[in-house]
Image 1: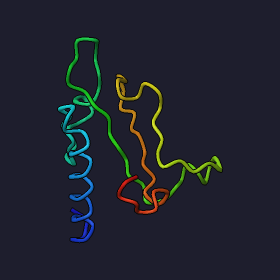
Image 2: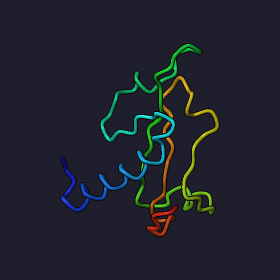
Image 3: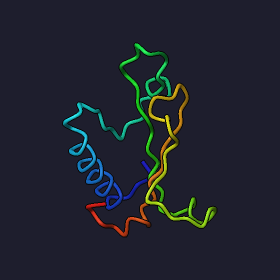
Length: 99
């Protein structure tokens, strides 16, 4: 791993908060890469699929589009048959735990 101890602690804390938010929906929130095939929704009977979330330290989307959202996801990306990640821009959340 290339993360220092403070970064690993922060990752674990973020994982814990997100997993807690999704626990009522029986969603497996993980920091381990399940592989692209595990994320793809291959057909309507596929019940095991997901999306990759990229947490960015910089608001690159806002710098390009002059609009600064806290995150972006393409419509339909969660049930996509391709690996289509969503993005969270940590800087735009002002380190507010409630965001």
